[in-house]
Length: 342
Image 1 (cartoon, rainbow, N blue to C red):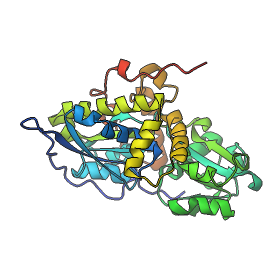
Image 2: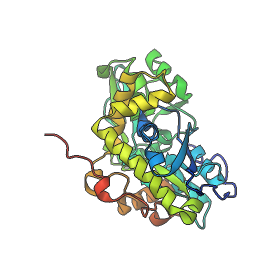
Image 3: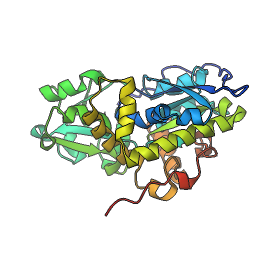
Image 4: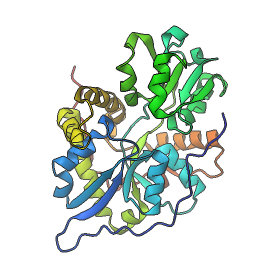
């Protein structure tokens, strides 16, 4: 597969964030999502709607995003102080911009990346990745699931070009699947809810990258290193408020979906609840039962760095400590999820 950079542009010089509260005023913060508003990120809107950010002295603006690369470059440029972006993208960004990192992950949102390929059973696609051989697979030109495919291919003993990519815009991906123009398509698992609404579950095979032994962290909350250095209490406050909302969303997602729909009222509540149900499987993956939401296992991140570096031929390998700063996480006791019901 032809190598494409995660990064659309090099980082601009980092502007000092104007986020210091004075005279009891709220501290303004700009937070960029990685993509559009939907159930995947509903907890952020719960924190905003219920005043959790204001309780922490913050005035948080949440904007839609244009992909993980855009989130990183937005923060690196100083336009945003915080955002949601992919850890693998951050690995490549830091490798291409060596030295003191200008962006760091501070809270691991997706404890496992929700990367899947979904195939049509009537085209011979099963849950065996080798069944994709010779097929047509739709994907956007530059997106994380497509980019990570060589990692799966290596684990499965397959050629990187075992199937033919058909470049398709995100908005057209469901259509080409339903029409049968392709045999399969890449998705974030929770983004496939729209496809599931149009095709029956027994018509589709879901091939999870994690099942292939590719244990990747996904999107994390990222922060400007200038903000971390100048006012770590602001970052800690944002994480406390957000974590509070995430824990509450696991307990009862309906209020979060309602809060999200205040911003995007055209979204279907039932669909977005289903989407969050899938998101929750990756946000609250097995590791979080030990170290809590938002944290990582250093060895797993180090292995991910090696995977990304080997796959994309990076000349340098950022350290796990340079990528992920856990010093501002809420206490572990605040990040624990209830034990699953028997």
